[in-house]
Length: 124
Image 1 (spheres, rainbow, N blue to C red):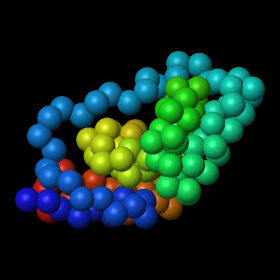
Image 2 (cartoon, helix red, strand yellow; image 1 turned 180 degrees about the horizontal axis):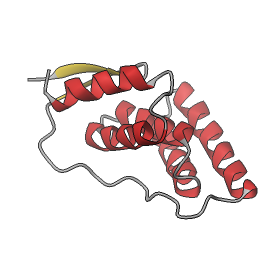
Image 3 (cartoon, rainbow, N blue to C red; image 1 turned 30 degrees about the horizontal axis):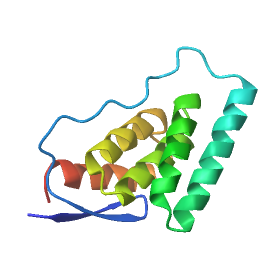
Image 4 (tube, helix red, strand yellow; image 1 turned 180 degrees about the vertical axis):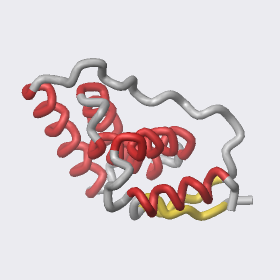
């Protein structure tokens, strides 16, 4: 039975998860240098811009690059999760939203993301 979930302002409809969650990008052992952080931010900016125009498929590689370059950036993780949600890749999105919550548990969006993930996990 489909359920509706609101994740960080995105409306999602998906059945309850039935398979293992994919693994998000590994946590960086060493913080990226300023140039790498800037490249990640630019990739995120371009990806979010594409999402705003409805080009979620075009946004995906940009946001994946942002997370690869700076895997500990809450903004990168949330943007990638949002894109995956819009592409109906809910299991992957949930994984990145969980990683976001590990890094930024007090972010203003954290409460709504926790509630939505709880609903998603429990199939309601």
